Image 1 (cartoon, rainbow, N blue to C red):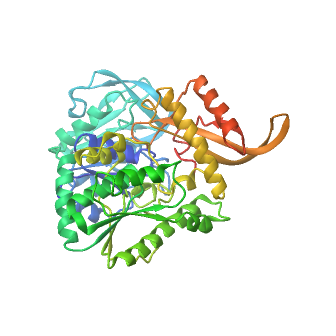
Image 2 (image 1 turned 180 degrees about the horizontal axis):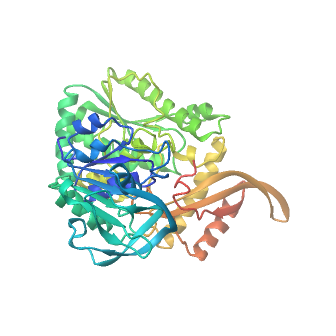
Image 3 (image 1 turned 90 degrees about the vertical axis):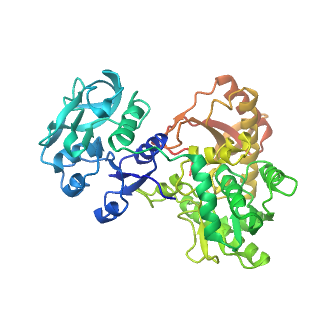
Length: 514
């Protein structure tokens, strides 16, 4: 799919995905690359603009992440954010020093609205700062365009060379006019038309998939989650009866969910996906027996998935393509995009075995963020209740059970999670929470039930509010709801005598427990 491109060069900051997502909200396609990527590769991409992200260190330290001065003389507009702004200054001969006062959090900002970057922005606004260093002397040709009480160069520009530096983070929602600033850069300064739209994506993807597959047979991994469901319906539209969708019941779904998936996508549902349900519960439990380490569990689940698909492929004859619902955050968090450390392997990215019995793997959603996937689902006519259903990880309850996975532990967390979700629904809170679930900790503690000593498990409840699932805050669920959920879980779910509520945000935590 030929499209305009803005490249985000990642220097190890925590907001690399968020920057890219904000750019896409401006209807401009964006991809993330590590600062170690050869500049020749960046040139071949022919980007309309380049954005340098934040980073964890100081640009002037020995061994710091850096870039070639040539990056700033290619005739392509460059926007440096935080570390990226300091690096631009440092590489071009300015001076960056340790600040006497660290700025962190919401900060009053005064901007020069004559700057193209701040067109339409209020002269006095609020931004999100996070820096120890500051620009002590601008590089030659630059002028300051914003300041705060403690930062005389909160933004600077060299319009003649198309270079812009921002000391704060416009990509986070705390920066009130941040989206407008990024819009000004990619649409006005870079001159992007803004043709990255999901209706266009659907049309182009259907055409491209049809051409690629030809008369080949396609096998789709359908979990019933948003990503795989959208991928399946997209493929169905592209190749029709050449598609077979296999749903692997690995015994790690939420309570009754396997039956619900079959009801929607099976022969009695409204889609023609050649749906096949495989009962592989005992197989997965056996493979996971004795395994406690999260990454190992993810890889085992990923490999078992592929092996089951291989077996199903042999039953239906030669299969040329395997479809998976990989999305862009899966790729980045698995260490395959940008400079971020591997946070976790995804069963459909990092967990794939090297030898797969298919000619090729199709990942039609690989370049999309979650909100874009949902928009594609709506474009395809998938009902809203499916498109906006609660997110569920590919490895299922395998990563919501801390430590070893057993059939008994699965039953415990399924029952607890069902109670939690039911009470959240009853309280009318489901529409206010972006994700909520129960997890089974590996902690056992002493309790008293019916005047008898117990030594049983603790359930952890999780609920978060988030815009993009890349950062999140713990939701403040009313005490009465938590009290009722707790009472029901300890009374109705066997081998649980304690319920905890996780108030950790992302970062430092992740939304899932493993």
